[in-house]
Image (tube, rainbow, N blue to C red):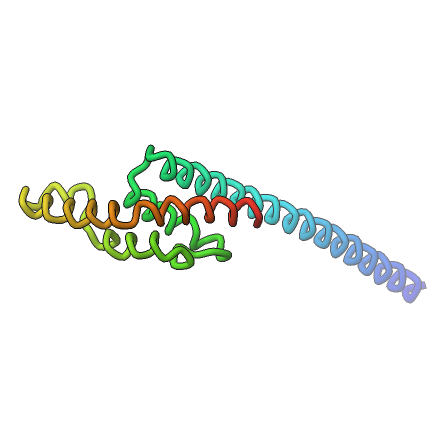
Amino acid sequence: MWTTVLLLVGIAILVAMGAYSIYLFIQLRKQKRLFEQARLARIARIKESIVIIAKAMHNDECNHSEGVIRLRMLLDPLGQKHLSDYPAMWALYEVVQDMPTHDERKALKRNERMKLDLQRESKEVELEKQIKTEVLQLLNDIQNN
């Protein structure tokens, strides 16, 4: 009689463990699906931001220097294209990447700010035509990925 009781308890434990493992497997699949949806939504938001900035740069609604800084930060997480794939935008980025902003910029003397502005603006003018071409290529690349 005890063997029957122990056998039934053992079977009940095995059934309970099997049911729990099935429950955990279902939860894992749900979690993976939610993670993938969140990842895809993030990629969509990043691409949308890239498109908005690129169009603004092309239409002269956004300063090219500001645009390349923002694009660099948005392209890196995508991992597909990098700003360095666009030579003119990369050249401008290399000029402005270490320039002080916000409070650091305000702390500079007026002539230092003017010198940095002249350097930035002259590079923007030099590369403007190429940047506009590259922005269109970027828009095409983003829409095809």
